[in-house]
Length: 333
Ligand code: ADP
Image (spheres, rainbow, N blue to C red):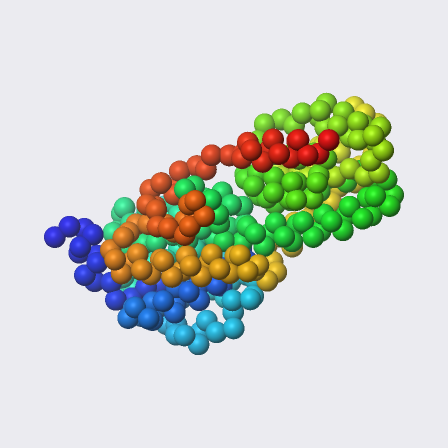
């Protein structure tokens, strides 16, 4: 009997957990996983606080009512965590034992690239049938055009920048607005294009301060009464944004104000788009388990929600989107 068939025969239960940073829409994915599992005759379990909760045995049975009235809520009812211990093979072995002891024979992991790597290890080392769902505002999961929470985060940031533009125009000011993204430029690029930002500073390589300063001066000369520079989060919150402010002052004598949007981008009611995609992804995750398609991740490719191998989903995502960079530059003159 193959490894796949052996696992397929035994799937009667499924556990679901969220790992890494939370993102709006995770609740929709949890709801879809639980309700589809029930429809497919699998007993669903919730695992609280990600891999840490798994290691603590923080696992409980769920039913259709456990996920009632949650899809409009941001955050995750299961909570999430970062679990550095999970990098160790002996700790993952313990996690696999706990799952088996609790009678959980398959797992849906909602998280980003790091969470997927942990999931892949659980499959490789302990043959736990596993499906990943991309839950991160950063939209940096490989093999998927989209991750749950990205649309909501962009909407939150765009609304904030629109408000900043009002005051920037009234006072003829330059604002440097930092958006989230850790190592990903995705939020910065989308927010930059959607707010008509004069410049977008990405978190890879050294920013071209000369170009940024010249662009602002050119705008002022043309009669612009405000400038917005969108900066992707650097190594630590604020680091890149404040270095742009300091360089503009030093090289061009330009005064600017820094605004760090921070964690508000993680919260809030998920947009319809996030709700729809998360629901489709949760549904597909259970169908994959039922059909013996694992280890897989659910992705958006060519606008459709489809299963892809977990192997291709843990590669580093190619970034940034050069078409969006070009678009932003072309339109921001
Ligand atoms: P995200 O899943 O959003 O990318 P992290 O990178 O913080 O967030 O990863 C979340 C958790 O996934 C980590 O705290 C750790 O428990 C687990 N993890 C991350 N990378 C690995 C890895 N290479 N091997 C095993 N587990 C990992």
